[in-house]
Length: 158
Image (tube, rainbow, N blue to C red):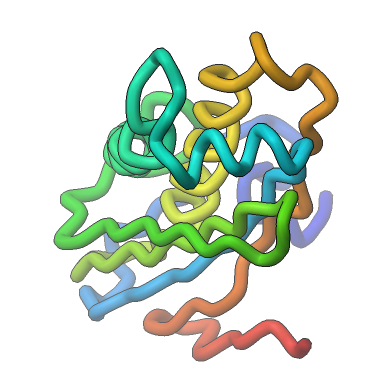
């Protein structure tokens, strides 16, 4: 039918059989942004939000999302992740950049885990701050780099 690996020749959905693929060390990095009012970012930076430290809650939520990606994305394989990191940077007076890195030694990659981590971290920032700023914008969320596996090394061009 198509070259999309999650469909068989008749067009039916399927979980890709990775049983014959070699076990390799795999790494994926993803990024995203949350734009907000400067006052909201100041509240986050100063850890002055009534709900607590927004970025630490978002970090934990993102880590949990990476660990639960197989439950969230229907055809993803559950993976025994070895490492998940999430970092935040203040790009300007109204933008938080989020970057995740996920590592595993397995038969399939961790791109979806890295993207899930960033997505849920961004959504958590939104959720915690929506009472003070409903105009926040999330995105873009994108894969920055992946290595390991048959498809080789990918690095997003800037």
